[in-house]
Image 1 (cartoon, rainbow, N blue to C red):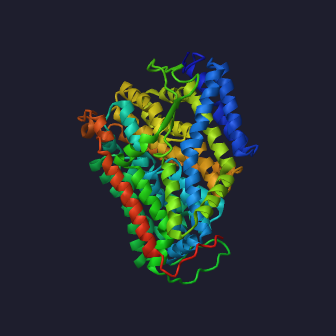
Image 2 (cartoon, rainbow, N blue to C red; image 1 turned 30 degrees about the horizontal axis):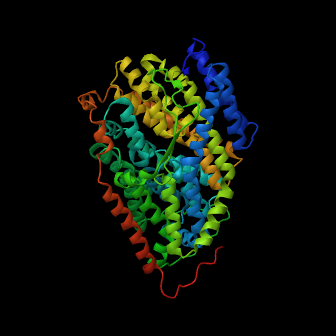
Image 3 (cartoon, rainbow, N blue to C red; image 1 turned 60 degrees about the vertical axis):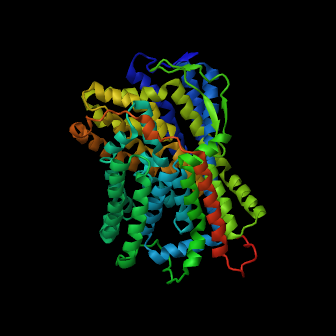
Length: 583
C-alpha cells in the first residue's frame, strides 16, 4: 500500500520544484535537443518513475504499473480516436472527394483567414462538443493540409482554435465530472460558465486572425470575424445558462458555421489573403449532389458522433464492455486527501468509445463512396502504419501523466499555486491549466483538482463554485500545450519528431489566453454572489441524465444506418457501377 504524500520535503516550494522536474525535462529535450516526441515521452516517464520512487517513496512496482495503465489509456481510447479520424480523412483523400471539398470551400471563400474560421474554429468546435478527446485537432488539421496549408501552420491554427469549446467538450463531460467531484449540479456550474467561456469564444476568432496575419488582417476581415464571434458566443452563453452543459458547443458551432457561410454569400474582403506564390483559384461551379457526396464522410461522422453521445445509444453499446483491474495497482494507492483507495480499472469500452463511432462512420463512408471492403481495410492498414510513432508518443505521454497523478506530483504542483492566499483567485486558473497540461484532458483536470479549487476558494471567503469555474476555464487554454494534444496533431499532420516546433508556437499563445482568464476570474470573484449564491448544488444525478429506455438507442442506430443506405442510392446514379480507383 502507498499513501500519497503531497509534500515529501515538508516544504511545498521544494516539493513542487521536484514535481515540476519531469515537465521541465520534457520541454528541454523537445525544444533544445529536438529529440523525437516518442523518445521524449518515454524518457520523461522514466524520470517520473525514478522521482516517484526516490522522492515520494512510491513502490517501484506501483510506478511501473501506473505507467502501464496510462500507456494502455493512451492507445485506447485516445489513440483509437486519432486512428479513426485519420482513417476517415484518408478515405476522403484517396477517393478524390477531398478535392471537391476544397473546391466547395473555395467557392464560399478563397481567403485563407476565413477558411481557418470555418474549419479550425467553427467545425472544430462542433467536433469538440460532440466527441472531444483530440478529435477536433486531428480532423481539422488534416483538412487544412488538404486545403493547401503547410503542416506546421495547420497544426498550430487547429490547436489555437481548439480552446473556446473545451470546457463543454464531449457533450459537457468536463462539467458533469466537475459536478460529481464537487457536489454541485451540472446546471449550476453551466450558469457560471455562461459568463466565462463565451468571452473566450468571442476573443479567439480575432486572436486567430491576428496570429495569422496581424492587425492588418483583422482590419480587412473584421466584419466576418465579428459575425463568427457573435454567432458563437451568444448561443453558447444562452444555451449554457438556460439548457445546461451538454449542448453549448453544438449550438454555438452550428450557429457560427451557418452565420458565416450566409454572411460570405453577401460579403467578401476586398483583399483576398493567399499564401506566397499561390495561384488564384479559378471560379468553380459544383452541383449540390457532388458537394453533398464529397462532404458525406464528415456528415456521416456528425451523425455517428451525435449517436455515440446519446445516453440511450450509450446504454446499448456499453453492454459489451470489457473491464479488468490493473495487476498490483488496483486499490493499492491511498488518496492523500480522502484516505480512500484509488481504483485502477482499465475499461475496454470497444464499442461505445468515440473512436469506434468514427471508424464505423469511415466504413459507412466507404459504402456511399463505393470503396470495396478490401480497399477500405488497406487504407486502414496504411493509417496504422502512418501513426505508429504518434501512437507511441501518446502512450508515453499518458504513462507519465498516470505516474504523476498516482504518486501525488500533480497535486503537489496544484497545492503550490493554492498557497497564494487572497490572491488565489488570480492564480486559480493556472491549476486547471497545469492539470490539463499533465493529463491532456479538462475532464481529468476537474476530477483531480475540482475539490481542491472549491475548498481553496471557500477558505479565502469567495463563492466556492468560482473555483471550479476557474479550473474549467484555465484548463481549456491548457489543451493546446498538452503533450497529448501536441502528439495527436503532430501524428495527424506528419510532424511526428518535430513536436518542439509546435510547442514554441503553442506555449506563448496559451500563456496569453491564460492571463486573460486569470484576470476575468479575479474580476468576477465577487460578482456572482447575488446571482449564484442561492443555488444549492443538489441534483447531480439529474445533471448526469435520467435512465432512458434502451430500445430508443436501437431505433436511433437503425435510423442512422437506413439514412446512409438511402443516401447511397440517391447520391450514386445507375451509371456509377464501378469502385473508385484509389489515388
